[in-house]
Amino acid sequence: MVLALLMKLYVQFQLLFHRKDGATAIEYLILVAIVALVILAAGTTLEPQIAAFFTRIGTAISP
Image (cartoon, rainbow, N blue to C red; front, side, top):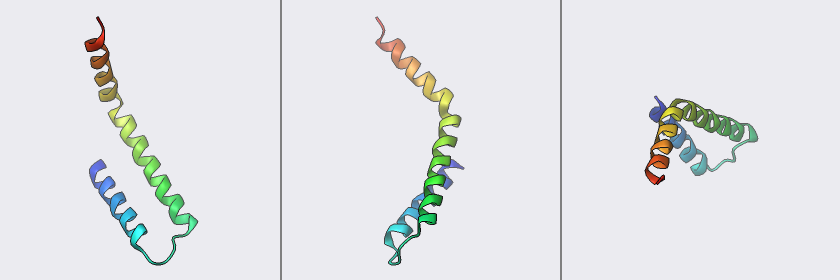
């Protein structure tokens, strides 16, 4: 699901940068909101794995 959303976001960015007419501030605001939602969703979903990863690193580094 996240991969599909990221792919859609990538396509929208490509379309945005290749269009000849200018994008309005509303379109930029919508894109920023989508990026923020994706980051928030990925962060809350992956938080336990990220915390465990850094815990393993800290344990491996500790004497």
